[in-house]
Amino acid sequence: MIKKNKNVIIRKCLTYVGLILYALFVLLPFAIMLISSLKQKEETIGTFTWLPKLGVTLRGYMNAFEKVASSTSIVEGFFNTLWIIIPPTLIGLFVSSLSAFAFAKMRFRGKDIMFGLLIATMMVPGIVTLVPSYVIWDALGVTANAPFLPLMIPGMFGAAACVFFMRQSFYAIPDSIIEAAKIDGLGPFQCFLRIVLPLSKPALLSQGILGFVGGYNDYFGPLIYLKSDYQTLQIAVSIFSDRYSGDWPSILAANVVAIVPTVLIYIFAQKYFIEGITAGGEKG
Amino acid sequence: MNKNMQKTKKKIKGEEIQGIVFANIPLLGFTIFGLIPLLLSVYLCFHTFKGLRLDSAAFIGLENFKAILEDELFYKALGNTVYVLFASIVSLVLSLVISGLIATGVKGAKGFKTVYFVPYVCSMVAVTFMWKWIYDYNYGVLNSTLMEWGWIKEPIDWLGSADYYRVAMFVLLVWGGMGYNIILLTSALTNVSRDLYEAADIDGASGLRKFFKITIPIISPTIFFLLVTGVNGALQAFAQFQVMTPDGGPDYQGLTVVFYLYRKLFNASGGSDLGVATATGWLIAVLIGAVTIVNFKLQRKWVNYD
Image (cartoon, rainbow over all chains, first blue to last red; front, side, top):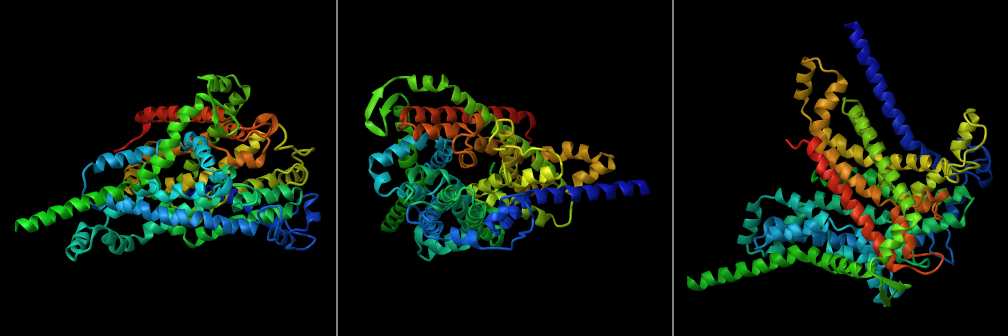
């Protein structure tokens, strides 16, 4: 009996050791990045040390926040990203929710077929439509004059996955509430706007956050459509890092700046973040 | 009475139209931004162009596909992509182990999960530069530490030599890929009833046996979902490789199939090849489709939907 207990304790200890080692594996790179971003440039040339021996400096961060004439600065990139991401995230979420509301709570013919079609669209790999989409926008003169539009407009029509998720959460709203609103004379759109949306704040928040973070971190889209004088944060950081090649504190400072916003969102809205992620997984 | 009924009928009809309109805005979006490009892609992949100009089209049949399938570099990219696929499967297995450990009822499970998920939240560009610094040949922490410990005498050129590039990228991929898996797996594991384990305890089943005979079958739908999405993501890997080695890496080991497509669309050495780029997109789609079908066929053997 004692021997068995001993085994249990050893196993428990090993479990914790494993989990802590993995946590270190996840976090150490961030620590290394943060420490190195605060070092003097001279100190990053030579053997790596954990503590900045020459003292801490914000020089790298000052460089990261500097304005540049030739291309998009990190700060400009940040605001460009917000401008490009926020409208499609909000409008797309609204449109997806409206569609989900119709599928969940309204009566019309052909509903199942339409929903099936919508879900089927998710199977078309974006990689096939990438080149022709670019060609169309280019032929319309958009890539030359307003290259951010291809990154904004398609998202404003909503997304099938988001419709699926919102429909699921609208099912949880009892029909009786909607019937009562109808008797009070509310049309379907009013009913959606005044009753269903306010009741679905958590679901909206988690979809909104996921959409925002996904757009914020997107690299491929901006890389294809945007030019160097108007870039999103991700590309601006990448250009900055090339320009400061060899100056690791500056490069890492810029990349810390790029990471901070989404990590803050994650820390403060973790619940919604995780809910959005797990709900997406459980549909599978 | 009759008038009233007509009014109601009209109202229902109006509601029906509204419903159809509301429901189909996303489908309209797909038609414009998905279906039209999809149809155009069929045209593009059988034609050749001068630069990006559509009016320079000349029909060449299957030549684009032939050009790709005769290009050694494409097979190289295919091999590299299979390697990413392998990394995604390893990260799924490791995630399963970590999730299993968390599910044994450790204290601070929430804290562990919070930490493990952080890489998923971070920009892939930033994370790639972070690892680039760690792998830096001259001053990176990895070479510094290994030399200090006396494990190596000379620094290793992690990102510049064909022998080590894959190892370096493998670690980055696994590091970045596990968080998402762990969140979904631990969430699925909390739904596993304690009773089943207690019954197994009475039968004297060992921990490992319980894991394979109870845990895995119950969460198999989640594992399957992660496998399908993971494979899909792996086949479209691009950003990490393009940021880490914009030139394709040593011996083109960083060239994935999407990277290959990108280089055909924006060819640095001379114009774009629209036809070949589109045909590459189709080949990637066929690859994704084939792997997904295999996955769905195999699932009957091991996924448990009871």
